[in-house]
Length: 406
Image (cartoon, rainbow, N blue to C red; front, side):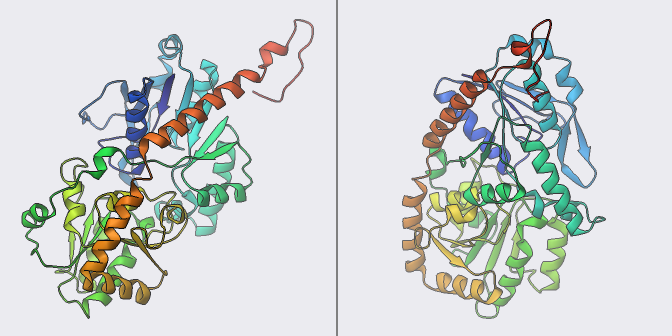
């Protein structure tokens, strides 16, 4: 099978969408399939492996300087070459410029178009469009999602919670739940002691860890307030925040205001293969309070490293979290979250046992098995697309029966 993916984001820009794309590209290629990707150019920065990747000039976003929007004209100018490539299916990964480019390309190439709904935009946009009322951004997100999903042959969603939200919007496009799995490399233990030494963290200091985009919708401010409460009973507790994003500076200011200058350490982006495993292993506890995740892949990454997880069970994380199997679930209340964090940090043997169970549980989320599920989804989508007659097929010189399609 020959697949064309289109996305407004990919490595070296680090986030969950980039990780998902890279994981599926690798797993599908290992099974003999060819996966091409059209992605933004990040001022010449590239990944270790750029095979089958076409970097396209992209616009910067004034409200989010990390991200880009593809310049579609540079891709559309290569229609002829793309048609000769004879792709079987086009997979859109982001709902911005890539969505409209992907839909247009798929129609011109005569191939089915699918899209993964990675992000819960209803709880996302108002952080980036603060000049609009929250009710307005929610209406915008819902109506935009309906229009975009209605223009697809099929839809991939990472969790049951996200699918229920989309059905609530009135979206009836064929959809299947296919999360992103964990590659085998995620289970190779990092060196936590080396990470602690590198950052001057004492070997016995209790460390909580958050990994992910440092964005407003991630609810990291909740973790800061929780840490402030925890500090009252565990004065040397440390919250590590690994990642970057538009909320970084506001969160640094909030940490200072809460008196956490010595209890919070922002370490920025870490290389996924060389540094992140060490960071996970340096932690006694992984903490996560986002309410807008469509999956929450970092929860599984932490479990794969044997680190116990304390998190809210909201949206997509409900599909991942299983009480007692590597995770403890907290209520969205500071007192409950802080009390459970204190319990796990003060009982290292219990936390270690929970982490061991988590590693066994994470092994069930194999990237290989989920890649097979994606391939089956692709094949059935292609077959359905071939069964639907096009307008050209049902038109005669004297009459043309409309199918209602463009």
